[in-house]
Image (cartoon, rainbow over the protein chains, first blue to last red):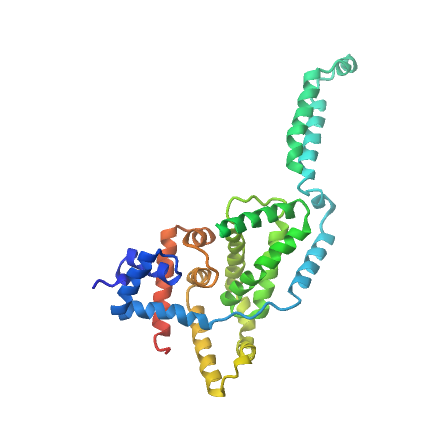
Length: 138
Length: 191
């Protein structure tokens, strides 16, 4: 009998068997093999031996310590970082875009007149941009 | 199917954390606190350090709340952070400081299972077995150790372990097999 241990496909079967992720046919195939193969049986018994390594329960104050660290971090966060709150970002970005658009309007002697006659499509576009960005903030 | 639903729920909870919902963070913490601490405990083999590292993991999760994108399963992302934190800690030699508490911890764990009233001899045998398993795991290279712990104790599949360790699935299979072979050699004498 060729040991499963000796090739990549067999090794995959064995690790799948250990984690019980094989289908019924695969489990049965490895079951049959390990009856006759001491080496593979040794590998299976390793899996069982690892059960000895239990981990202790998480200590009672874990959450309280974590929340205290979070609160301390929030308290020391610079004001500009607090503005990076997810819903605020697209709104600020939209505002900055509109502001930038207004700054880029050429300033000529009759700029005031031009501004008053600002292209209605430009305003509509800016409003549409904001509408597009708003759902991201929800 | 249930697992898929749970993963989606985790991602949804994380997105809600990003919207400022702290209750969702509490739910994620409740769900994943145990597995993360236990994984880290088996990685560094010291309870105090494992909890300190787990705090760092959940702090990083919280800090990432506004930039989180559910591109991978939440558990994969979480264990990627946990593995990164553990490997850094091992590299920085934090564990060395905690070595002295190993015996105390084993004794403490013995007391936890004292309900079934084993004899002194049984306790000693159990203690020796536990120590040997711990030493065998500790002797594995860090990446193999992480792969075995995720595979054996946390139930992550090959694809998830590959994503956590940034390697291919076939590399994970080979990593795992080498690790189990090495453990077999070290624990062969154990009855």
